Length: 495
Image 1 (cartoon, helix red, strand yellow):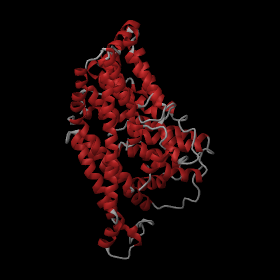
Image 2: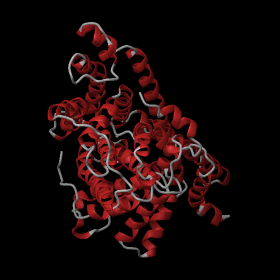
Image 3: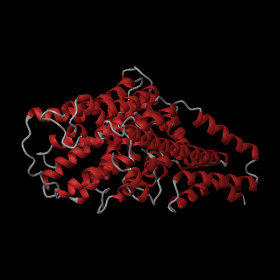
Image 4: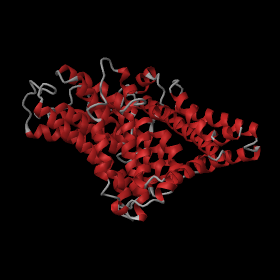
């Protein structure tokens, strides 16, 4: 009986690992396991009823009253609004026009789109599905390799979990009690380096093996002025939004919470003012957008602008609905993870792991490698909300030599973990990106070409810790159902 009680915390992890493969959402699995083992603790006398009251108080203080987490609804709304407004479609068209004659031009355009969307929205699941619906048919039509095409979409679409503003970075910063702004600054260069590795890989393999990514045929001649106008239409608005969101944090103009509000308002302005204004302005010129409502309109500028905004209320209402659904599931996951982790601690799990590590004699790098392996096997939400609070105090007390100063170990470890956790979107047994693309027919083998690039990235990041004092629709990633084909189709439809 004593053996059973002593190892109850380890049984919690085993139960969670088994139940995750049943297809139930991660949030309900973690909450159910936490409540179940808390009941076992009461029945065995390991816990007393008053201890369970601390779970409720921690949920209220850790989630409901946590001002840092108020950035999450705003960043989610910003991302959903940009996706539904058609801004991403304009960006893809601009990048495709610019890179049309380059080897692997369309895959390069998709990767750049993923980087820009990551820096503008931080959305993952819906971005993968959206780019699959927009770009995958074009790449397959131009005889691109199916593996290269799907891998490019999945890998670039998941950059939003790392490149700020990222919801995962907000959660990690809150758990480590560190500055969200500094965490964003620390993650920016590694995220861009990972995107750069994707671009280099695509360019090299497209040059060495042109059959995998044939050059576009019949692209037609585009004048320099047309190219400039196309890039201005597709890229300048998004870059302005990125500047106001990240720039306000970097230059100290606003806190991360305030910058999220700026991003939400900017996304509305971009969708319902800037984009219709540009379309209506160009409708009677040689640069008119062929499929735009304003181009087909016969009225004056004001009428064209109004017709381009037809259905704005429906679009805004759907955006709010999707955002509320996503935010609700995010906080449900946070609450359930707190139930699991607090039950784990009350049963003595933290002391059990600490004692094991100390008695094992493992060094700092051995422990770090074990944590990284967990990112390969589990999704980021489990590792972040359950494993991180337990191992972070141990990791932060270890000596990693000259790789990071003691004051910067928390940020250095957090970014290493964040880069590694992005791998969980592409690698089995979980691999949510594989599930996102189930809605798109004839996809497969998408994780293999890009997972090595992600595995190399943490080791490239090791010598570059963040400087001290340097001044985010994750619905699918958070709930992670294994039977989410219908959910992906519903949530991921393009604007």
